[in-house]
Length: 173
Image (cartoon, rainbow, N blue to C red; front, side):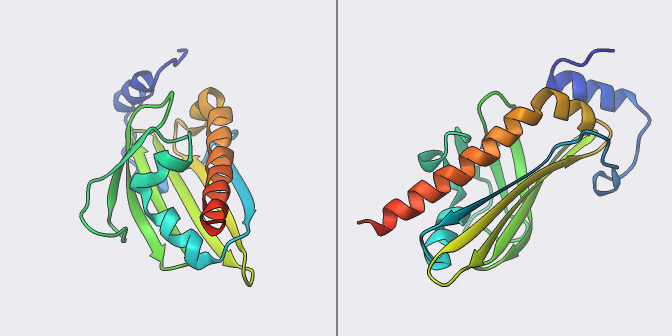
C-alpha cells in the first residue's frame, strides 16, 4: 500500500492491531531526527521570553502559520497549543518538560506517530546557543520521514534562523 496523506497514515494505524502506548513506539530506520543549533547575539533573558511566547511565533518564523494556546497563562508543563504549519495538518502540542530560562519540550501524537520537539538554551555569557531538535517515533515514522523529512528539517532551520533574527533585532533598538 502506498500511503499518500496524513489521513492515510491515520487510517493505516487505526486498521492495525497495535495498542502500544505512544511513548513506547519504536523509532524505525529513516525516522526524522533533526537538530539545528544557532548562536544568538543576545542573552538568554532576551531569548527565553520570545521562545515561550508561542502565540507570537508566526511573527518571526514562516514555518508557523498560527499558534493558539489552548491553556490559559504562561507556558507550563501540561500546556496545550494548537499549531498550524504550512503543508501540514493542524496539530496539538502538549508541553512535557519545562525548565525556566533553560528548555522546554513538547509532543504531538497521532495514531502510529509521535513527534517530539525540544528547545534548549545555553548561556554563553552575553550570547545564547539555541539547540532545536525535532524527532518522530512510531510505526509510521519511517514513512513520515520519506514524505515529510526534508520539510521538517527545513522548518527547524527556519525556526532557528527566525528566532536569531528576531532576538538580535530586539537588541538593536
